[in-house]
Image (cartoon, rainbow, N blue to C red; front, side, top):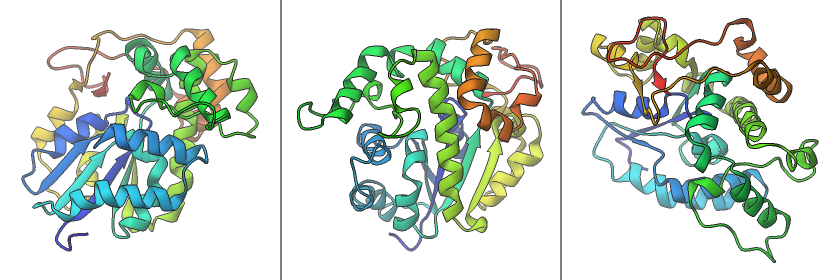
Length: 291
């Protein structure tokens, strides 16, 4: 690792502002940052590791070849990757980069699940791709690994877990609910390995509504606060379809049944689902980030 470059990683469930963070932090000349760096390499590795099909040694070897070399050759003071794919690889990243900083970016599960389900359905837990991955996990000798396209590589419950059998009967919506709850649970668990001085957790809703939270995040990365960045953060980005889909009561009940522990942990069970407003300058109450 280059002695002059500080690595940092922004992890999340996805659809939580990770791409916005890449755009936001790239305004600093001392920062080299990516959104889902080398995704087709990292995402299959992350799923295989979570599923017990790749060892921690294999994870570290691959991350050293990918992220390690990128950090080593970076000309900048800070090198970052803002990626939900890395959420499953925190343990390996911490081994490879013992001084790295980690930011856990959280967003209301109702908005994340709705965004995945209504706007990225073709590449997130669709029936066919999930069945192909399940067949590979069940019998990797008989079934070759899927190609490294995003749509094939979304975590399934580990074999032997209480959810493993029920998950096979889940709908796409239920699978996405599982993802939001499990990835945040996994992040919280693995961040226990990290010294408190090297990790922070931020809710997207706080970052876009109170400039003090953004200032705190920038200070954590040793970067100066700018009002222009706060204004930039308040505007929705990565908007595939400029429509807001509130969950139905049935869908809310499904989310709470599958991922209610995380909804309660972050306090989202105590608030109403907010609406996204797609304008050049959305009202202050409308959180920005990814749609």
